[in-house]
Length: 301
Image (cartoon, rainbow, N blue to C red; front, side):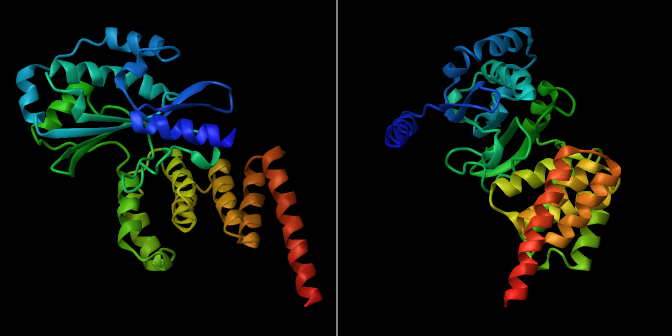
C-alpha cells in the first residue's frame, strides 16, 4: 500500500497535479502543485466560484503590461478561509490583466502536525511562508514584493502598487524582521543578549497579536529548525508574558529541545495564567516523568 501511494504521488508530480489529503477533521484538501482547473471541482468549487463571481475586478490589460515579465508563486491552503476568499479574486484579476496562467504557480500546503504549512517537496524553503495565502511576485528570479494573507488596501490596489513599484509593505513586518535576523546570524548567537535585545527593539512596535510570531515559530519547527523556532517563541514570550498560550508554546519547544527545567517553569507559569488546563497539566506530568528518569540515570552513574 505504501508503494502504491508513493507511485501515485510520483505520477501526480510528473503531471503537475496536486495530491489530496484528509486533515484531522476528515476534510479533503490539495497538497503540492495545483492546476487552476482543480479549484473548479468539488469540494473546492463552491467557495472558488462564489468569490470569483462576487469579485468585480478594476484591473485592465493596460495594467497588465507592468506584469508581463513577472511570475507569481502562490502558497495557499484549501483549508484556509483567507485563501478561499482571496485566491479566486487574484485569479480573476490575473485574467483581467490579460496574462497567462503559465506565469503563476499554485502550491497547496498541509495544515496538520509535523507538516504544518509545508509542501510535499519542501517548496516553502527559503520563502518564509508563515501565512496563507502568500503571493510572491518575482522578476528575473528575484522577489519584488509579496501579499501576505490579506490585502493591505484591497487586492486591486495592492497589485497596482506592486506593478508600479510604489511603496508597499505587506502585513507581518515583524516576522520578516525576525526571519532576516535568523538568516543573517549564526544559530549559536541567536540567544546572546545583544541579538535578543536588538531584535526585540526592532519588532516590539510591529507586532499586534500574539499569533504572529507563534505561527511563525510553529512553521520553523515543522521545517526542523528547532533552535530558530525557540528564538521566535522566546521573543513572543517577552512580548506577551501574560498570555498562557504563548507560555505554553514556548514550553513546548523547550521540551522538544530537551530543556526540561526551563520547559517546566514555562508550563507552571502557563498553568498559573490558565488554571486547570488539561493540556498544560499533561505536559507537566510528562516533564516530571522525564526529570525523574534523568535523575535516576545520574544516580546509577
